[in-house]
Image 1: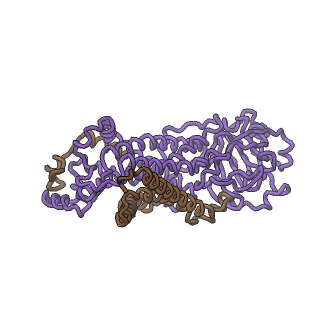
Image 2: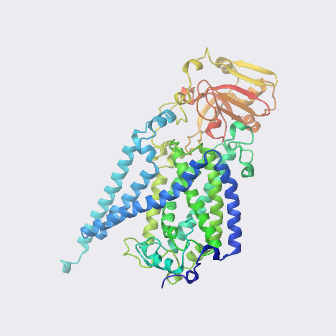
Image 3: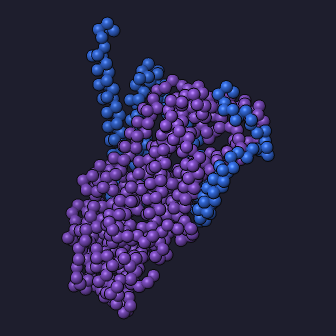
Length: 165
Length: 427
């Protein structure tokens, strides 16, 4: 309990004994909910279930799937570089992986080709190019990162005083 | 974020808050990066960025002139949310190109910042007790709207520009009403948190002593500094920016937008090779309807209806204007050189010397905006044309042959292609 903020010591036993808290904050949030409600009934007018599913689902999918997924992936990278005894190499994998993953996340519909037909009809362009371009960017990111690592290692070797050998 | 209210005693909370195997325990979260400074920096960036996104989004709705006619309005039930609407101007002619380019490009650029911000506060999602007070309970409920709303807006936007229409309904109402729900929570969150963020950024020294619920009580070994993490987030934003912005800048820079839907290359070469929104095939245009023999434009006004062939139009005074195509999806073209009949000359043809509003109908069978309304000032602008040529050649089928509308500063969908009927008069 050492690190806990003092307010948490006065925890409510049950909700019916919940203290009110700041009245100003309650007023502010009530105004916010009023506006959100006004827009919300319009948002939910057509397909309330689908929209609510998307709204809440987006938050849950992000917090309970995406975040754990990339956390686990990041830990695997760190553990991997620890296993070969080169923790300092972690960023050289992590940075290109993050950047490449980000591009894939944002442009997944185009890269995966799942909208190929509509895209071709809509724009007169072929979406076949996107997978190749993404792979190319990924290759450049990892290649550049590897090159940087090699250069830094070589410089470190040259700069190392003879006594270290 | 909203959690189901959990009833329980002090002791029970104490136990699950100490057990660091559970995410409800502050000790579960080991990253040494989390802390008020990191969250505050990202929060302040989002405050500025999202405000611009919201304003440019509202502006885009105004650009459709929704008050003019039901055919322009995708959210007729907006009520008070349309309080700010104004008559969309025709100057500068690149206005919509600019505002919508900013909206989409900035939105994409902010994605890494949003993800990092959400990551930085994720322990709070699991924090117990679920509510310390009524005010705190309401705040957490509001955070569901904030996080759900932010993700909903970014996801629907990103899917829409890639033509991946899997969201539950039409894009316009979802993105517009969703934006208001999100913005309601965003405003409250700003009022509640901005003072803390500003204090944190102004007074970095005290950070370590201050007790907060973001810093891990048992941080793991750092593999990255906080500044390093911010640089990574900024690098992600920069990468998305440089691979996207070219689709709004056009020219040679279009080829730099490697992953953007209208980046890379143009669909064709030559005068009609510029970017297309909806090909003739997509719109269900039958080539037989657009031949010189078959196609007739029906112009209706005060003095009745006139039927014009393309040859009749070519005999009228032809004018040129250099105007871009700017799509709601954020991409745009450079100014193209259009040539055709002025809209106001067509208005005069049917008895309106002082141009009124105009309803334009297309041959188009599928897709939205088969009909579009233009306001009197758009019709009166001498650069507004019923174009027959683009860049010195006949319009191509995909750019609206036999004739299309082109109006300065108007969103692309109001520049109706394959025009069949024009009705002048008060709408």
